[in-house]
Length: 294
Length: 307
Image 1 (tube, each protein chain N blue to C red):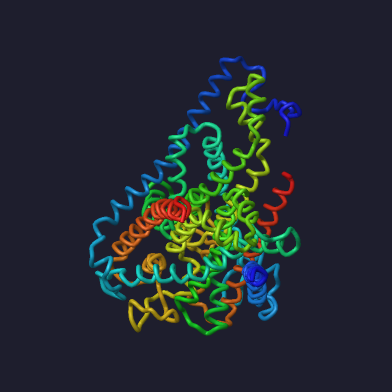
Image 2 (cartoon, chains in turn brown, cyan):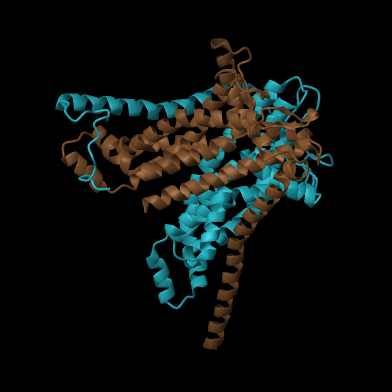
C-alpha cells in the first residue's frame, strides 16, 4: 500500500519534471525559431535580390522603385534618437536612482515608485500621442522647424520612456552595495554627496552600465512613440529640429503596403534582422558587464 | 571595492582641499538638485494625466465607449476595439501563464546548473530584448504567411505570448525566490516529494506576488501595439464586431489609436485619438490598482488562514 503510493508519487514527479523542462525548452525553441526565420527572411535582400551588404548599410539612397535599398538614413536615424535619449535620460535616470537609494525618505519613495510604475505601464502609442499633441506643437511654435515633427521631439519622448528602466536598475545596483562602503566614506569625513560621487558611483559602475545598455535596448526598438513624432522623412535630419526616420518607423510605416516577395519587403525584413542583431549584441554586452562584476 | 584602495580623484566636483563649509554647501546643493529631479518625474506624470483628461474627458460618452467604429464618417465608437483588447489579453494569458510558470518553477526549483539551464536563461534574456516590432514581423512570417491564418486574434495573442514570456518567467522566479527555504525543508522533511512541495507549499505561498506581477504585465499586454499591427490586423472582425472566433481579425484599442491617426480618413481623428488615449491611460491605472489589491487578497486567502 505505502509502496504503491510512493511509486505513484515518484511517477508524478517524473512526469511533472518532464513537462516543466519542456516548457523551459520552449523558450530556447522560440528564440531559435525567431533567429532562424528572421535570418532567412532578412538576408533575402542580399541572396535573392543580390544587393551588397555594404550598399544596404552605408548607402543613403532608399528608392525602391529605382532598385535602391540603402538603409543608411534609417540606421543613422535610430543611432541619433538613441544617443539623444540616453544622453538626456541616462544621467537623469541614474540621478533619480541615487536619490531613491541614498536620499529619499520613505514617504517620497512611496510616492515616486508607483509613479515610475505608472510611467512603465503607459503604452508606447499613448506616449506617441502625447508627443504628437503636446510636444510637436511646442516645437513648431518655438523653433525653426516648420512642421514640429523632429528628431529632438522623438528623442525627448524616448528619454522619458527609458527613464523607468534606468531608474529602477540603477537604484538596484546602488542598493546592492554593502553599507560598509558608505559608513567607511562618511567616517572619513566625506559628505553624502562626496560619498555618492567618489565611492558609490565607481563601485556601482557595472550595474549602471547594465542600466544604460538596457535603456539603449529599449530606445532602439521603440516604434510607435517615435513614429508619431519624428516626421517619417526619408532624409538625414537637417539639424536637431529636422524630421527624419528610423529603422523601426520605416518598418511600421511601409510594411502594411509592401507586397509579399518584393524588394521593399525584403529590405524591411533586413532592417528587422539588423534590429535583432543589435538587440543580441546589447544582451551580450550586459552579460559581459555583469561577469566583470563578479 | 574597498574605500582605502580608491584613488582620490582630483578632477571630481568637490576638490579635496576645499573647506568643510564649501563641501557642506555642495552637499546641500546636490541634495536639493536631486530632490528637484525626482519630484519632476512625479510632476511629469501628473502633467500627462491632467493633460489627457483635459483632452479626452469630454469624449468619454457611452456612445464612444460602446459604439461601433466608423470607416469614413464622424462619430465612430471604440466598443469592439475595447472588446478585442480584452479578448487578445485573455488569450495571451491563457497561453503564457502556464508556460511561464512551469519554466519559472523549473529554473528556480529544479534546474541543475549546466548547459541546458544556461541556454534557457540566455534565450529568455534575448527574447526579452527583442523589439516588439521585430516580434510582430516574426508573427507575420509564421502565423500569417506560414500558417495562412490571415490577421487573427490568435496570431496576435501567440505573438504577444513570445513577447511576454520572459517577463512572466521572471515574475514567477522572483515570487518563488521570496518563499523561505524553511518551507521547502519542512515539507520535504515530512516526506513530500519535490513536486508535492512545489504544488502544495511553494506555489501557494508565492501566488500573491505572482498575481501582482501577472496583472501588471497584463496591463502592458493591453496597451501593446507594434506587435499586433501585422498579426491581429487593422480592422475589427467583419462577421461580428464582438467576435469569439480567434481566427478572425481583431483590431485592439491601442492599434486603433495608431491606425486612426496614420491611415484612416475619418474627419474626427482628434476625438477618436484623445478618447482612446484616455481610455488606455485609465486602464493603466485599473491594472496597477488591481495588481496590488488582487495580489494581496489572494495571498491572504491562500496563506493567511490554515485549511
